[in-house]
Amino acid sequence: QVQLVESGGGSVQAGGSLRLSCVASGSIARIERMEWHRQIRGARELVARIDNGGRTTYNHAVKDRFQISRDNARNTVFLQMDSLKPEDTGVYYCWRDTYCAGRACHAGAWGQGTQVTVSS
Image (cartoon, rainbow, N blue to C red; front, side):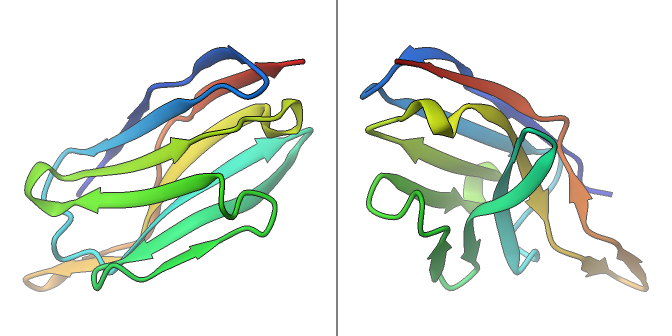
């Protein structure tokens, strides 16, 4: 089944930018929804979602600062984060939707996460 690996996290000052990548071990072309979530103080929340038609949804706290995109040819989903704030600090996770390949269907799955730290 398709597994996910995130990268691109790090430490930046407020107002800075980071670009997260989520590389899948197989094709994401058949996977309808790909999402980024973050865990802050034990609570996990949706950051952004993109479907195969390119339609996007954002958490109101990041709208106009973050942009999600996907490149099915490279099996990669990106999260461009601009104007970062200290409250964006957390662990960012990539998530893929359930998909079926042949007769086998695979439940949604998470990557291992990448730490983002924003200092004031």
